[in-house]
Image (cartoon, rainbow, N blue to C red):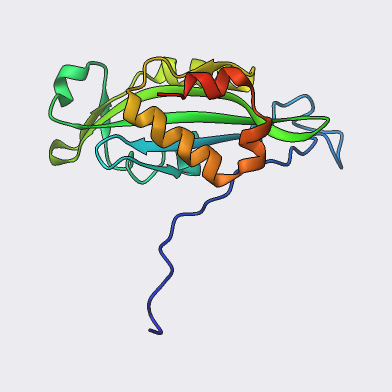
Length: 171
């Protein structure tokens, strides 16, 4: 009992945006704050979604130790994941899921190789930050997992989100 650590994944979205210039007038003025963007990874096979803050810098536990190659074929036997960029914004009623975009990732642990398109991942993060909903490439079970995860994580954010998001994740 004494040496056991709680290994449950953190279940928290960052929903408070700080002013990057608050408190000083030096380096970083005008910097873009990414505090309202949260990466969520869906394990397609297991049908599980988790918040993975490390994915912001390609350092999530599933990405560590993997060399990413430019073609899908080189990791054809890999396991499929979706990296979802979730952006939270505010309106008068309160915070809501404003941008949700999905990027494919394939990881073959046995050969420590994987596939992801880094440019696509960065572009989709940018589009999420701009309030876009881009989940059309996702398979239906993964859309269901994401919808249940977002609603279950915070029903109020889900309820305040756009009809476009609800429709895009309806299967």
